[in-house]
Length: 457
Image 1 (tube, rainbow, N blue to C red):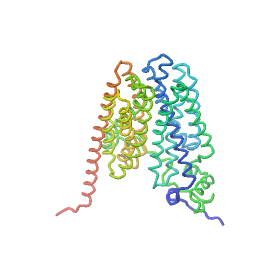
Image 2: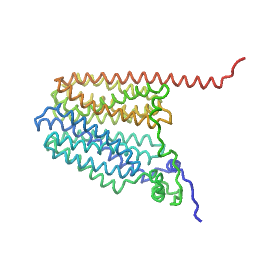
Image 3: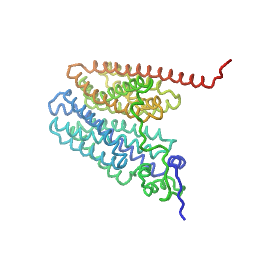
Image 4: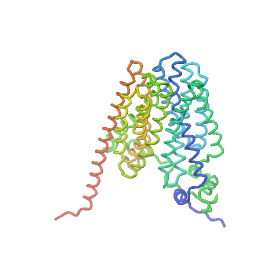
């Protein structure tokens, strides 16, 4: 007689040693994240060469950058829910092929309008891949390494920009701007073929939709000694379809916190996407060589990857995400000013832009942690999701603002100095948010204490 067991998925994954299947899954997600980060930034690397080849101003690429960023927002909003219906693996593969094909087709673009259409279509795929790579990595990782694994995959996107900048510095002078789109299209297609064979579906997803036979094969590979069979019943520790109402983000005294948090997210995306989109062009305008400008963009991404990993470790040690992110933004603001002063010195400029990436881009993971800390469990997922969604407005405004400033005739030094202003606004906003958070905790503690304090007669 066959007995049916209840198997807790989280308990199973947490107790088992990290299996080959888990390592392979996380590795494939990291590779796809690197290529996602590379392709997302290719247009910024190509603008100086495209401007010269087509005889158009750099500022005229502002609409392209804004629409491409907007397409990534739409892609994340559309393909996120689709993965809950059709699975992480399927959506990751489809989105990877989408951005690979349309990136490859971008090498054939002969006009601005044609390139805009192709980058919008590629952006849909790029936006759809990101959240699903993070979700799949999280669902395959035991609790003891989950935060590290997710951070590494997110940092992989910065690594992709770093690799892309170095590749562009070599390829564009030798083979033209088309070469980076060819590389950016072919490599993801190869990776998609590898993922077809090596990337499994989420065991949690299969169990949630009732595919116990498929889930049992995956969990048997993760924990061979648990003797998992198709007759076992898998228990999810988190309700799959639980939703937190948006109105909870504005209930009580939380409305002000939500607005302040959104301001920080918008500024974060605005400054980072402004720098990623226009840095090569601004450095070229300031007299730097095309190779130096592209290397600077690569080092910004390397700094972001290093910063994300460093700040994550520091936050775990001191337990104060507000202080870490404020320090990161302040460091970024100081060195943005240094960039403005060092535009004529190639070596110091490269070192300085690395530090800007370390402080600014490296703090991005920290504000997600802050968002998680200010909302209760009942509305935490909605709070973080909406903060990211609203923040993406900055990824559209940043490139557009850069185009306006360049078209207005501002020099590179002035434009960089202006970027200090929103960065410091973010620091001040975080300071206010931290003060409110501390005050609310004191109120909660005092109310709790008053409940248990005996009343003196």
